[in-house]
Length: 417
Image (cartoon, rainbow, N blue to C red; front, top):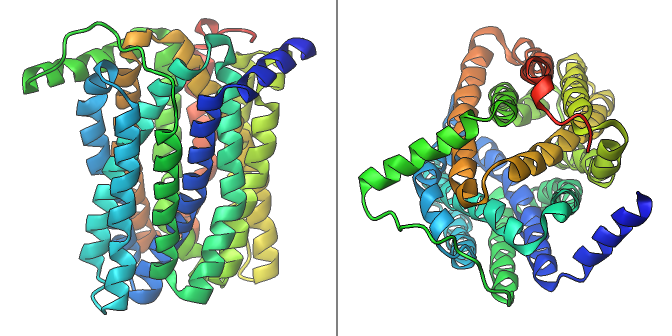
């Protein structure tokens, strides 16, 4: 078993196009973490944004992109994905540069941040859906778990370095200027993807040319996700996790800066520590499945990831102790949820038909895009009504509730491997 795993891994290391895509994702992931850290800080520190303002910013980042991505799923199934990946990178680079430009000219405002968030969110969704399909073209089916684990390892390294770097850049250069580094990372990503040589196999299906056919694509995407009981359970579990954990999107930065009294640099370190757990998870995701089976790993990782969230509202307003609480949650909780996500993505890539992966991924994406702002706004409203700390207690229930869907459908999930 160990020998076989090593063979699959070494094959991926010799796959030039996969390595180019992997490197591109890693570079842009670091930049994206800088923006994820700096954007709410720019809203809070430069404009004085409230919890509601941050909730609206989260909506701008997710909802428009999800709606566009849902309609684009069928188009992605029928066309080359590489040009779309490059275009999405370059558009994000140009748009993000508007933030430092506005800051330097004294024109930075919440409407501008919302507009940039909308465009970046749309491009990010299109990139994610195209990439989800593209990876199945670059690697063989039996290599998908290793490929997804390596991609998640790159995300984990970005999680370790990006937020800490973002916090330091905010402290040194201000939040808007820090975002310029993300723009440069997208340029680098586009150049690397442009260097890939392998041609794409496009399914021989009719092209969608009108709104009716696009609506049919949406219906087909939902149908292929819903008709298989195992895929349906994965969809419902991930959707539940998304809506509850999206409370974090609008509240975590505000909670850490205002109630726990952390500095931007300290918060960057805390968030970056989540990457340590995610990196460890990426390394063990395949071995634990081979040892205990995907069904058990999916359920246990959800339960553990949810349980660790109790430390967030328990953190006291004493910065060193608060950091210890939050770092523990980031390392163990993020690690467990990373194991879940790697195996969830791989399992649905294997179970779903290849010629509908784009439409199915778009269905997944629109659910995330609708539920994330729904959860973020719900969290923001609850924070205004009952306070930040009481609202964050709800996070602890997220993993347990999500796991119930998988437990109910456990006989449909693969028992091992």
